[in-house]
Image (cartoon, rainbow, N blue to C red; front, side, top):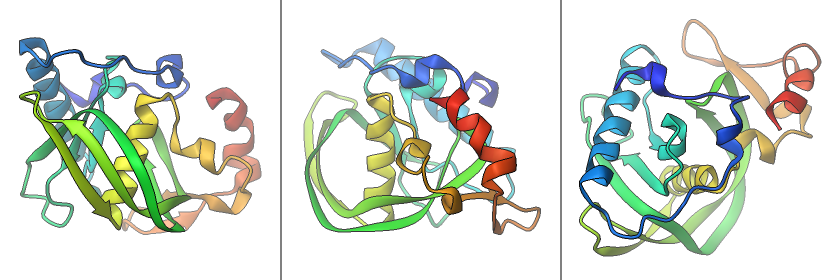
Length: 191
């Protein structure tokens, strides 16, 4: 699957809740393969970014399936961890604002408040229950993707904060994005 399969706002499917997967099967494995190939194809087109994660809804499949990059530091490591029906069972730590982007929100980044630590319950691709504790960037990524399964996009957390929006320049640096000229009118469209 190619990056063009990734849907973006204002596609209304991004605002829908995804359905739980009853039992992972061959169609689930195919979905995971499709998600992985779309995420990597997107990444290959972006010199300064990695595809940190993807939710099934982002390729227009309303199933609670998420893939998360195994290594955020090494672009050559192209493995993903699969989380089926992921749930955050406990939020811990403090709430910190940091930068996020999204494959479904073109060319907009934001400083989004998230908990620094979470506890997660999910199924792996074979249907086995997994529980783990995530902190730092991994905790942020998992919260972002679980939001997707609930029809929430990162901009929903910051839509009333004009100074929270950014763009990536040609050198891969984040620059403030003028709220009045680039964001204000789109917030209504994206909601």
